[in-house]
Length: 201
Image (cartoon, rainbow, N blue to C red; front, top):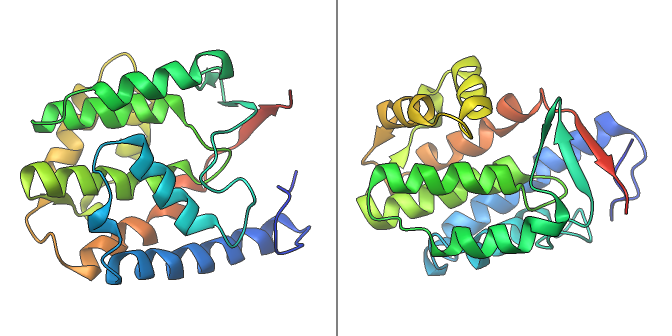
């Protein structure tokens, strides 16, 4: 299934390439313009703004909370009936320590608030919180793909693994465009495995 898009593309592979190209370009603009640093780190409003900026040229639903239930494999992300409440609770979660920040990231991943592009947006959102609170960011090139994916799958039950993996990849090079872009460049490396099932309502 190819998502309806503003580009008029009907081939999934072509759409994926264009999505990558455009979202990378927009991610650079977001960083270089200074817009990213004006967002309210840790709030859903910031994640919405990031998602809208990255995908606004591609999808009408950019920055909008999804209107379908989605699942990956046997894991169902937050059902629509609980999604708004989940987002409000995440907004209220503390974020003063590394552990609190990763717990917030895990909960937002469970919520998976958008129809597409959650991982890319959430990694930028995570780094924004880490930068504000701890003056650190993740160097995603130091994060092993398989370890990350397995740890994220287990994180709703046990988050010690994902905390360890991400803590090992922390860097204080917070203003580096190169480090920032590693999270974007790796986004397809991390997300290419994903097959979402949707239930249109």
